[in-house]
Image 1 (cartoon, rainbow, N blue to C red):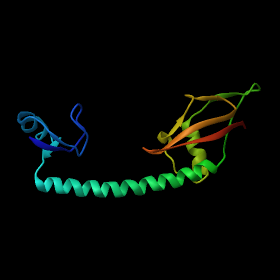
Image 2: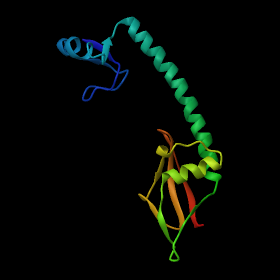
Image 3: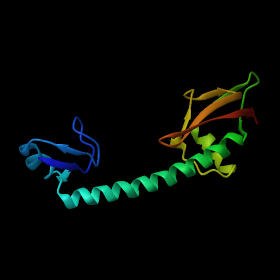
Image 4: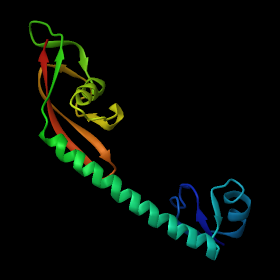
Length: 148
């Protein structure tokens, strides 16, 4: 049986894959669970059109992410934190503070897109982080934590 997957199915394929399965598996599980549809000629045409539109949209998103990545490489971010006399931070600096500092610079980046190499920053100084703007665009940038 020739089917088109509507969702990712473990050990079978990803969304929009055209796969061949046994008749019982397709009729009794995949199609009733709305995980797949029959691969008719009209369904294949619709799939091809959807993939074409998705590819066009994906290139637009990737281009926007690349433009933002170029801007992110040029900025300098300083985050203030309360510290002791030895330079240890009371608490820690995490991706939430980095996201707020980026927002002040004019970048709307969600905290979930920011990956700090250390789990939590507990000392003042220069540190680095990654921002995942797109699944193919990841930017490294440096920021500095200073005492308030």
